[in-house]
Amino acid sequence: MLYFAYGSNMNWDQMRERCPSAKFVCIARLTNHRLVFPRKSDTRGCGVSSVEAAKNGDVWGVVFQIDELDVGRLDKREGYNPILEPERNSYVRKEIRVDGDGDNARPLTVFTCVANHQPGQHRPSAEYERAIVEGAKFWHLPADYLKKLEAIATSEPQGHGS
Image (cartoon, rainbow, N blue to C red):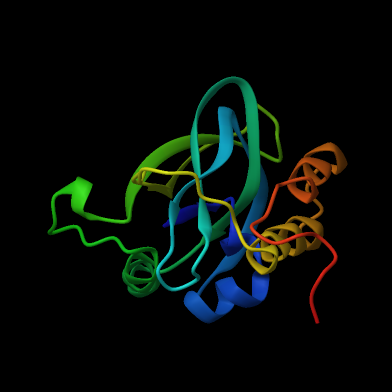
């Protein structure tokens, strides 16, 4: 299956750990959407990413080919169980259309994971934001998009840590 990663799953080390079969296909752009942090992860203890509709917005990410066994592994990591009602999952799997290499003449139908919103304001940790930024740099996403990712407000002050 083709999977569109836009958050921490763009981080190649994390993706290979979660989905050993993952093979890079291309970078891609999801138009008319924006990156948001609508829920808090119990595992990470911080806000985690999702996408939502936003006129004139773009979310860049990476398309991977992953085998069926790894789709199940990814579902488990993302808190998705197809047997449960959608609202009882942390994320739901959704089929979307992205532009391969940012070119609308190269449409790809892929699946991605979209978070179910939780009440409240959720910010990513500096570590989680760094995983997203490192993934974006690794795959050479557009420089203006990278700047937006680097400007994401985190739950800790920037530049403090060990």
